[in-house]
Length: 309
Ligand SMILES: Cc1cc2nc3c(=O)[nH]c(=O)nc-3n(C[C@H](O)[C@H](O)[C@H](O)COP(=O)(O)OP(=O)(O)OC[C@H]3O[C@@H](n4cnc5c(N)ncnc54)[C@H](O)[C@@H]3O)c2cc1C
Image (cartoon, rainbow, N blue to C red):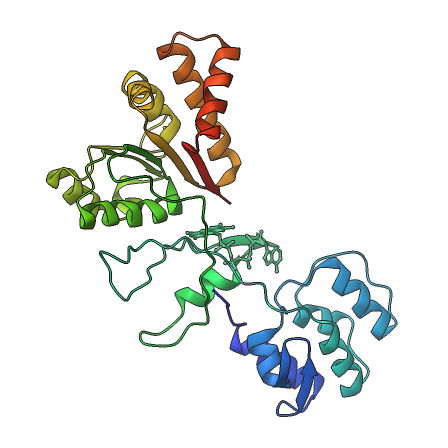
């Protein structure tokens, strides 16, 4: 998805600098009006240090190495005139597209592309701020247009229809698995499907709850294990559920199951990999070295696939 910058921020930059918003400018993103560049094309939300350094050269002021938004930078270290601001525009970088897993299936949701997005937030000086793209998406009105392209992942794909799959997707990691399960349902795949899902709270965070429960009822999902980490005193995560069902997990591996992990890289995917190793050692009666070899073989066979971020 190619997000746009906040309209009020682009407006504020125009009024602060006095630049002609309609003036056409040549930029490496193409020829656009100044306002179009500021609102839709250029990264103004969180400038990398290299851009701040170039800015410092243009305004001829010492600026400590930092990442900062353009509006704040302009307020603290103002440009002298509109010409200098146009120079600043020329050093700004294009907005980076954000990747989102597709959570729909062409077979089940013909003509549609679904995504599953968590609103990113962080705190600066005790003020809550939101990530550019997830915030942009959350504010879109119904029936508007979104700029996007499809980035193909040729690795993270379903195996043959008769193969079993184990999917581990906490949080937004559920996205590709909703698409996998919907696809397997739509084509009537004979392989078994086992999903591990995790989030903080059952009541508020059980993404696709009714769909998943329907798939359990219709038998499309052979097994569904959920872990809600904050619904009890002791934190429970997907890896704990995997370990709890370790014997069955190992028997699925032995019968050729493909294992998929999607979601947060840190710390989830490392913890899940450790759990897989532990399961192989415990239920496959293997030493640590032998378990590592077994695991490596799974990877070589393309039976252990990750899409983590
Ligand atoms: C292969 C892949 C698949 C993905 N799939 C999904 C998915 O299915 N669902 C999903 O929700 N996400 C997914 N992501 C993550 C997604 O691409 C975005 O990274 C995520 O939505 C955050 O983007 P954002 O623009 O909202 O936040 P950004 O604006 O990019 O901010 C991200 C972080 O940068 C820092 N930051 C930003 N601005 C400032 C500032 N002004 N000052 C200080 N710090 C700042 C903060 O730490 C913030 O949390 C995926 C990523 C990859 C690589």
